[in-house]
Image (cartoon, rainbow, N blue to C red; front, side):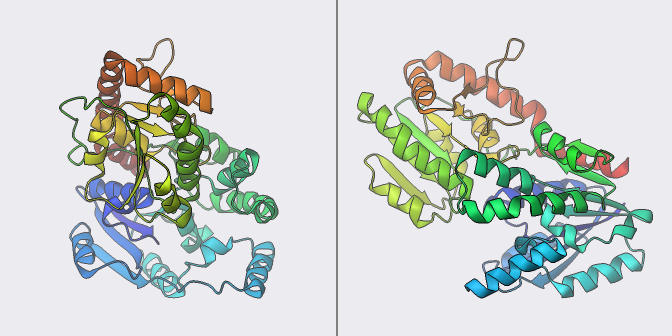
Amino acid sequence: MKILMLSSTFPYPPSRGGTQVRTFNLLKFLSQKHSIILVTQRSPDVNDLEVDSLRSSVEELAIFPRPQEPNKGTFAKLRRFSNFIIEGTPPSVLSIYSPEMQKWVDEFVGEGKCEAITCEHCVNEIYIRHQWQEKVKTLVNVHSSIYGTCRQQLETGTAEKPLRDRLNLPLLLRYEKRYCSKFSFIIATTEEDRKQLQEFNPNSKISVIPNGVDLSLFPYRSSDPGGKQLIFVGTMDYLSNIDAARFLSLEIFPKLQERYPDATLALVGARPVPAVQELSTCTGVKVTGPVPSMAEYLRQATVCVIPMRTGFGIKNKTLEAMAVGTPVVASDRGLEGLAVDGEDTPLRALRANNVGEYIEAIIRLFEDRQLRQMLSENGRSLIETEYTWEVQGQRYERVLLG
């Protein structure tokens, strides 16, 4: 099958973040049996070696320059919001829209050069024409509902700009309802997201395909390091991760230090914004910035804490910690889509949603090596059977062939 894949985010190296990880690994799997034509954008931080590496993974690679950042002045923002009201497409989507890329895609599809088109993240839906459903399979790999995420941040009080988001919320609902109708198939990463997307268009064909882990990059650790070392991982310029890092560092960790003065906390991930960088002034907290191997930092930690309060979709950070064998304490958001506890489910992680619950769960793991080992083994087993990219790639392929 000839598959045209659209990704405004340059999907290499996959270590850059969640979108890149998912897009590259699905692309890599499909390219084993199918002809992949990838259309993407190149931002200034992408180098020639990365371009060459990505090119070797596909049959054809079409690259367009990333559009320049939009004007940040007040008048420009008001104009973009007015356009959102009138035209129905969010400024965040329009800001990375490339007319040159659109022309290339239109010509490629018009000449009948592909049998299926996938949009790797919902922002790429803008390139899809409604009438294309009649001659090719069209699929959007949503990653997570932007309406659902915006609503959740408002409900939890973690929205960066509440007034703006309240104004945007009904517009985002209208937008997602509209674009979902353009596609033959929709992919969500969790059942919760599937239900949200199904409300937009009850007739849509929606499948759930979670994220996965490359086990060669996240091998199971050989031993429990013991100690009192906590870790939180993620890209540190993403709003949900910023909120989680600050919640952990300022509200949970100080109370834990009252009992364990020697406890440490590592905040590991690229692009830490000032609100994260300043946490390094807290006693026992280290902000690393980008690291050569996330797996190595996870292996050294006693417990991985994932106190997410917002953000839909399955979390790569949770899967990767389980793959390495680091015991996990996480919120409902951090464990979304994963069966980790219950009467008929082996215990694979500890669940916590408030400061007291986090403290209790972390203390249990600090004091109980057998419990740590049980979570480590059960978590790794879950990843090996259900959450490798081989498994997710097979599911993705079945949707495209179906």
